[in-house]
Image (cartoon, rainbow, N blue to C red):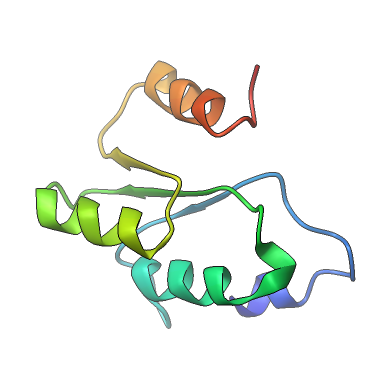
Length: 89
C-alpha cells in the first residue's frame, strides 16, 4: 500500500496484481485497504496466488478483489482475467 500511496496525485496504475502471501501486508489486507481509499475506487485488483481453497477465493472477492487467479497459470488465463476487468481488449 505504501508504494501505491507514493504515486503522484492522479497517477493510478491500470491494474494491481497481489499475492495472498506478501511481506509486510498480505494480499487480503492490501485489498481491504485499497477498497477503503476513495482514490482507488475504480482500480482493478487481481488476487494471483497459490491459495486454492474456495474459502480463500470467496474472502478475496468479498473483500473487493475484482478477479482471482490461481498459480500456476497460463499466460492466456491472465489475459482473460485482465480482459474481464477491462484492462485488455
